[in-house]
Length: 154
Image (cartoon, rainbow, N blue to C red; front, side):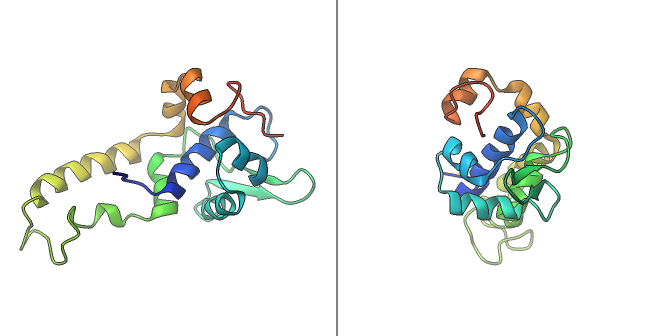
């Protein structure tokens, strides 16, 4: 079971990869998609969704691509997930039952309301800098399929 979409997973992985690149240059979606092992066209659509909320900026031309619009200390997990998946997850019934709410709660309503609030709070309070602090080089290399701690995105 997934709480976030494949697109949100790609977006999170892309933010991590871009933040680990050496230098301040832009990263092309093509190079990034190879490192993340995902389709370039799909990743380009995902990355475009991160520009409007000010998470990424893009640069055209020979050395074009995307780069972080602000420091990873200010980008939260919720910023990225909301940009890709929206926030419906935090407003809907766990079982998808229409009309479920405080007036007519489903059997899971009370439990899910509490747990959903905890998840939302954690996502809003967790920055990519904090994620980076907890991520080991081995985990990064294995999961994001890079051969070294710093991705070769050039």
